Image (cartoon, one colour):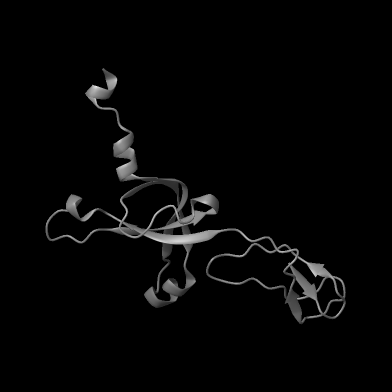
Length: 136
């Protein structure tokens, strides 16, 4: 949320994206164009992390590069894995229009990302599996 310096009106909330900051353009109370100051007490912050996952190199055919995909991680899922961990991600696959790539390529380009709902480490999954001895 932002405070109008001219009249003290509290503006917001504004949903911020990871790649751009959204600021108010005019104050609805005094119709002023700013300046606006961030109101730290009334602003709600969330944990956010962007990770890149990649195919396991041992599962890729010889001579081919592993594919990769960006994953958006929010809340308590942040910092659940570190570089080099083998993980399984469950989430929502979505695309967004990327204007910067569109101007470079000359045709519509969509960037794709996964919004994570669950992250499980592969070694932890394997250790949770029951063996025949465990069943007996």
